[in-house]
Length: 157
Image 1 (cartoon, helix red, strand yellow):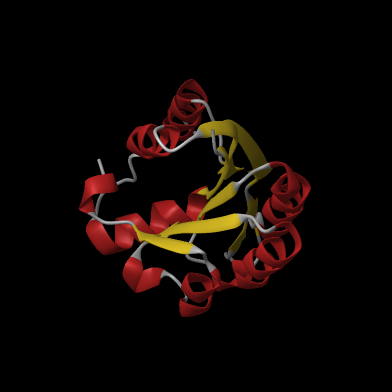
Image 2 (tube, rainbow, N blue to C red; image 1 turned 120 degrees about the vertical axis):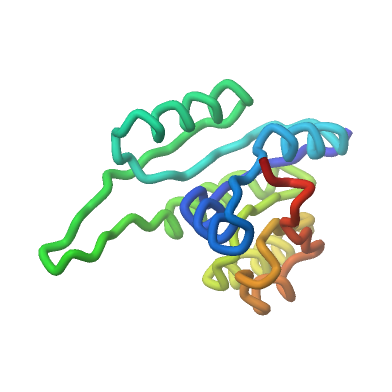
């Protein structure tokens, strides 16, 4: 049975599905789809901790589905901008597990991950699948993936 590891850039998926469709991503449907393809041996969702009730409920729902939720504090800068980036954390975790699975599934449209996918495919002969909103997924990430799955209305709530 194929071993699958899932990595979710929660902020990226939240904003891209909201901006393109005005709807939220259906993590349960994704879980059902991927578990039909093999054994999910690791599933991690990377989010920003804002500690409001809706965020806590969402994170609890992810945990109930089967995701480990990793949180970073929300940082508001003095100029009003915010910081909350998991790119390095996701990259480290992908590199650590890629040698032990058949497929890495990344949910993000962030082109910064294209080098990561090329690296794990070359070094570990792993399939690197990407789920992203078509209009907001970097072409470099799509091209680096073994398989690109456009997030469309069938994967939305």
